[in-house]
Picture 1 (tube, one colour):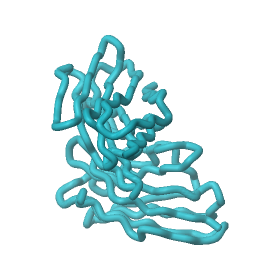
Picture 2 (tube, one colour):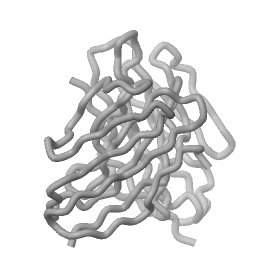
Picture 3 (tube, one colour):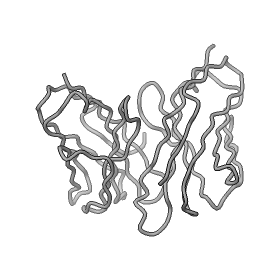
Length: 110
Length: 117
């Protein structure tokens, strides 16, 4: 158990919809990272938050957004979903290396 | 730019064989971390090892060993006497390590290891 909790584990929805993925980091970890794992793109960094502030952006689409709340949990919002957004979304947290990953949320777009 | 290459897409071995997973990285930075993560069929990402760019000492942990060579920009992973439970996708990753770096992980494409009984 990494100590990072992601909910839900599975999400099935339709094109055009909006979903929210949730991540609770390990106790004391201020940094939260989001990654997307797809067959086409592999494992890619999306965005990082540190203590409530956005720290870095990677290959994140404009339809996607994230935030980190005062209690340090983070949410990744995906809107106007397309078939290509089907993927496994991971959250990771750290205070110092290494990053510890949650079990992921598997998003399926029908 | 940084890049991680895992040229081996799939490897199949028979139980008790030794197997080496290759990882080659590219970065112009002098301070960085290298990692190996394991993704079993259940899907989670499990941290295996971290290596700092200033520490080229090889490491052994049980049946696992890692060979870090800066001269060839490689960080290879060997499993000795493989077991069926080792079957998984293994990812090599790179992260920069200096003040101001985001510490995001740059992953290779992974190597699928299948250990046959």
